Length: 252
Length: 269
Ligand SMILES: Nc1ncnc2c1ncn2[C@@H]1O[C@H](COP(=O)(O)OP(=O)(O)O)[C@@H](O)[C@H]1O
Ligand SMILES: [Mg+2]
Image (cartoon, rainbow over all chains, first blue to last red; front, side, top):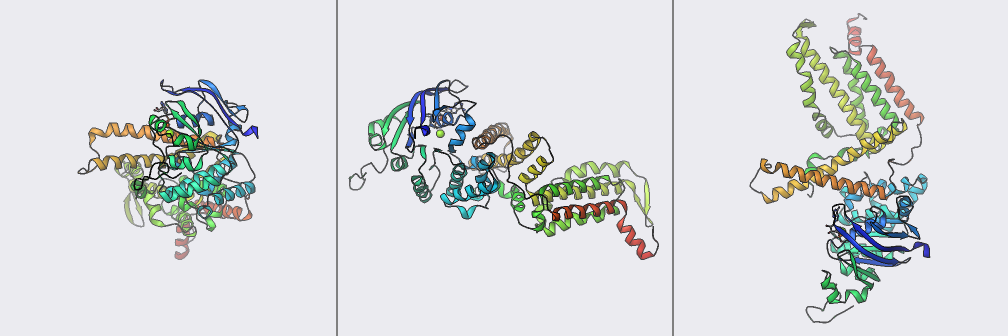
């Protein structure tokens, strides 16, 4: 299904204050792929996601979502296809109940209220928090908030899920639950993170970013095992790949 | 608790209350809005020396609060916020208006009567407005305003302002907490850092507000707050509005306490 392809061609972005955040990035992501975008703080991961979503527009180069170039005109169409989960769920949940929050997107697309209800239930069920639908979002736990934020995006039935550091600030159990959830999705997934263990488990492909440029792009298993590359990009090999501190044996 | 300020100010309590399911909550938002609006006009239309005529109108907030099963204390606490303004406006009257009138043989300064009347009016209007929010919720009120064809921009402004109050409060609490942790021996905030603290706060609130707005736009927000459809205005809603309106009008035209009083003394009017 080529129309679900996401392509970035020779992308440059300079912030208004003159900071060069993205310096010539090119890649192509196919339908159903799960890609991890990793890099140290300030490498430009969040900026890249903003460019994909049409929140920022490149100074040079272009972003294509399913053959459609992302411009001010095509942004509404593009955003219907791509769902972005923010780094801080508090920014994403702004309605008074979980239900209304998840219904926010579908209602904006003027769907019938019965269809809205169906989608909200489906999305909440998918992330396993249907029982929380009448609660106020700010009263949920960190993991529940994250799940609600994901549901609020799923209800729009995007083809592509973008996630900015989804496991940051989650306790180990919630993190594990989230990973299992994400693993079950058939969407194209683009996940930025420095939780390399998560990337290792969820993403078949990894793009390593350093100073706004691609330092490496390839199969996760190979890249993350490359200690020199990881170190060079301010990252560390996932624990799963590091030698066991007790017996020195590696798994993975 | 992570949000100390939040629990003190409990800013989102009205939203919580608005989600209850009582007879009052189920009334159509537009109908509730209009009823409250008529009520406000009636209350304000009373003369500046009127007190007894206003008393029957207390029934409206009292009955709503009872039927909607709302807790008294938090509502009263919020009404106190308006108190300084009311006192500020009203207190001039006893100072400047010394003329005495006699009520039931008692000689009272007219200034004090005006003051009491203003206070009573403000209690009635503020409580009615608070109860409207607490039984309807800001989102639905917004859609009621839209049904009245109030321009989208004004409604949006109102809703976002209301939303961002909590955003601002959360940022305030974070900054204050960070400050308190590094200045343990201190009560309050030292004046020398007020400037930078306020600046921080402004920037952070602004950035947060921007992210929230971005999240809304990414989910197809174009300026219309959609809160789901309503089953339309039912006979029950019409009855609610008609009932109250009739009562308000009667209370406005006849001084009910005086009528009852004269019934007992046997002299009508
Ligand atoms: N609004 C902005 N204005 C100027 N510079 C910014 C802005 N946002 C981010 N940057 C800079 O751009 C670079 C990339 O940021 P970002 O994409 O957020 O990195 P990451 O998400 O990988 O941590 C950083 O050096 C950051 O300081
Ligand atoms: Mg980031």
